[in-house]
Image 1 (cartoon, chains in turn red, blue):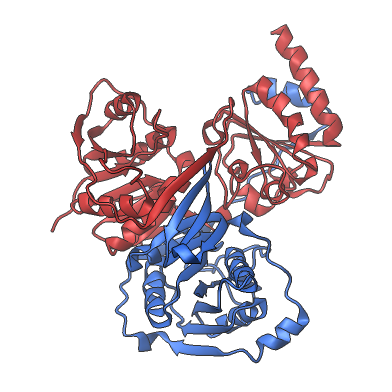
Image 2: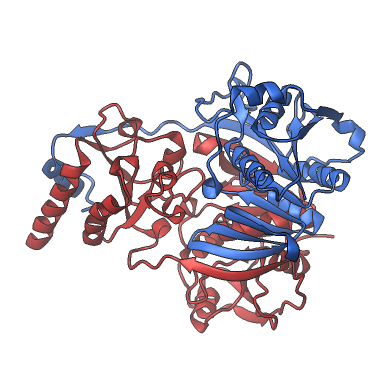
Length: 319
Length: 251
């Protein structure tokens, strides 16, 4: 059997298409074949229209299920296996959403998964980071279906076009009843989303408490920045895990990354090394973070942050 | 109930890795090796559940070279009741690891498999999901809370997802993968290290499993990422803001 075409698993929050989807579609354009975008779960009209207008997407499949709360990893994986057997590529974002589902799909198709690709060299050879981003592995796949998750920061978001893709409904008909959704606790923030913010200000153990993250908030508000944290700060219980940047957290690549009270363990650097400009504020002049920072400021963050906040207010007042 | 905890021997997280001169892989000779930190968390969870009398037996499994016995001894010292090494010198892909673990599950018949969410060497984050898929079991990935409800034959998990937390109920048997905040692994005490020496550690040869494992993908080359160049230190907040405005043109 010959396989052709690319199936992209879209990520959305039931209201909007997540921008990570645009990056995965960009990666798909570097592969041979037509692109089909798959929307799973409750989708709004806004999501459907954004999906249809993505450049190079030729088909949009909507998996609307008559079954209640059926979008569990087990059901979605089984469904994707059903609809994807003829494809040559199955792509998903390397987010907790994609990472949860895609390896299960790969195993059911008896193919390997290539995780978090950052470059596409040929139709079967890809580059991915290993060892917390300290090394890059070039991996060749021998499988007839290549199942891959894509790292958002490595592929520029694809813009919309005027051509609208065809929409087709493909319902999910069976429920394996293996797992059941109970509830979700989403942290609501007025700030930009961490992985797509232009500026990120992140705090580490040096902040000493969760309350002290308010020092970052004032600055983040002025800069329209997202707030992040090191694993040490998450470990210490200062902030929730969704703030974590690093090898086992989120990977960000903003125009400006401000690391405050973060020593710069390699596990953290793995999540922010691709930032265009890095600023480090730390009282320890020998902290490893200064080795990667474009601009380093040595000193007590409890003095520096209020000063930075004041100066920003003054400068923004002038402009 | 019975719990299986697969553990992986990896280069210690504190070691600065070196690439073999031919670019074929990462140097592991004369390098400090440890149990994958996420597997320590998985094991700690099982031990906690055993102390709470929810789990009766914990079996640690590793797939790797002879030296992975050390990792299994550490697992026994951490509280596993017995350990199994499936010995192979091949570096196997997550799919093949999952296929071997599936056979282990069929032999040992655990009700629950707890794994680390990812290994810190290849950073794949696949094995748990693949094993659950091959077994047709429920899966709970990246969990920060686990509660077992034996009367209902279910477990309740809290998952760490990008947008916050997600709570699920899973039907047993299940595969779950541990995230960072599930627990904090305790230090191994010397008496436990001594006790571990007398616990059973069985060594099986992979070839005896009769599995046909295909090579699905291959690493062509590994290269070190050149370290990012450091910049300058600035003296004050004002100079910093000037630089960000005039040089970097961001603020």
